[in-house]
Image 1: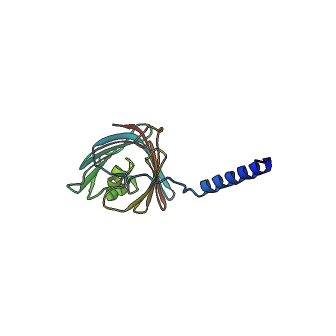
Image 2: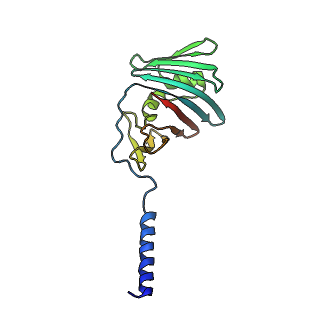
Image 3: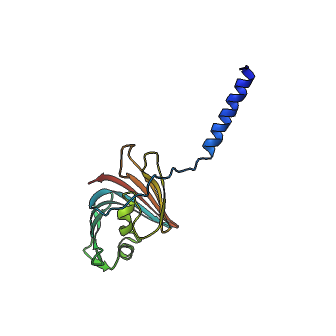
Length: 191
């Protein structure tokens, strides 16, 4: 084969490979939709939330033992902000603030709005924090190269996942966004 033909063939092959790569979608779909099984867990870490111009940063310890949840929220210096508890079967949630006041509500968004100033979707977070959609609502998702969920969209929320390394099965970082609202979660410890 003449050198000119080899160069032309190589250039054509290079252009074909570039065109093929340019046509790939930005996210790789996960091979199977993630299945949510509501099993107990404990997670500890940090959470920051921004709603328009209001922002808050806290540390948390969350014990999820269906149908109960217990959430301890502290400042970055360790001072108690609130202790939240709830039972979805009994449709009862409560918060005790640092000054000893107790408030109750029928659901998590109403209670967290009263106590923390923003509606935290705790019931949905139990699935989202583990990289799965919550049951009962349609969801779309994209996977990463390891077959884990990298991006989940459900009920207007967008959750972006980051994992500690290629072997990690549970997310380490989440960015949960809704128009005008953003929550960032870093899970320092899973149990």
